[in-house]
Amino acid sequence: MTETPGIVVTGASGRMGQMLARTVMESERAHLVGAVEREGHDWIGRDLGEAMGGTACGITVTDDPLEAFAKAQGILDFSAPEASAEFAGIAAQARAVHVIGTTGLGPDHLDRIAAAARHAVIVQAGNMSLGLNLLTKVTQMVAAALDDEYDIEIVEAHHNRKVDAPSGTALMLGEAAAAGRGVQLDDVADRGRDGMTGPRRRGDIGFAALRGGDIVGEHDVIFAGAGERLMLRHVASDRGLFARGALKAVLWGQDKKPGAYDMHDVLGLG
Ligand SMILES: NC(=O)C1=CN([C@@H]2O[C@H](COP(=O)(O)OP(=O)(O)OC[C@H]3O[C@@H](n4cnc5c(N)ncnc54)[C@H](OP(=O)(O)O)[C@@H]3O)[C@@H](O)[C@H]2O)C=CC1
Ligand SMILES: O=C(O)C1=N[C@H](C(=O)O)C[C@H](O)C1
Figure (cartoon, rainbow, N blue to C red):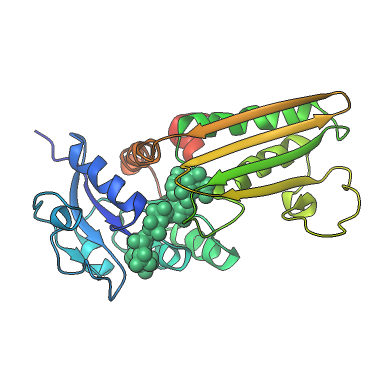
């Protein structure tokens, strides 16, 4: 029997970290070999299964990514921007496939991740679900078909613990809409309105973010024209959706050449 890839989960105590750890532990196609949390976290040194409120699983949570990644073939990383940029370099040294779901990444983080992708496989996406990645394709198609008489607005809603806005998914949808229109998102993005904003600029792509309760993730792309509105919507109701997508990505990446990939590559969406 062939050995399945050994996986390390970072941000292991987080909402996604725990979901990812459970998903890997339940999978027959991969096995968990490590769990990383930040230095000083009270889970360090504890058994992951017990820390998650269940039975012992034999994985001790560590704050040493270097040691943990060295024995892994894949890293599932939904943590924080600075951590993900650092993990990219360490995962590349270990030649492990690094799946990055972390959002809120700035230009410096993205540059460091791109540098690491010269040496190892990195799959990065602000949303790991099939439905949402398909919706980016539809968004691009609709944006290409309609001219700028149709105003594009992207509305996202998330739980009250989310720290970045607009969401990574909203930005993916914005990029898709901008690509459909043949423009750069940075040139047309309107990322927040307050006060005397003046009338809407023709061709802008607007973003609005709602935060509340336990909303997992909801995204609307609205094309508002004269006398009609076209609305595309994705609703995630279970974080397991993202974890299953991430697991799919890390398995897909095992036999790929070093490089930067996204979920369109993994899901064969072109
Ligand atoms: N691409 C996708 O499909 C999805 C992406 N996400 C993204 O994933 C990220 C995590 O989301 P979520 O799980 O809800 O957030 P959480 O805050 O629940 O989890 C993040 C975890 O990462 C830990 N962490 C922070 N810094 C480090 C570090 N240096 N080393 C190790 N661990 C670290 C945090 O620890 P501490 O709390 O102690 O700081 C925390 O446990 C976000 O960016 C979110 O937007 C979420 C869902 C889907
Ligand atoms: O923080 C979250 O929870 C989520 N983050 C991702 C994003 O920023 O788009 C994906 C999903 O919507 C949940």
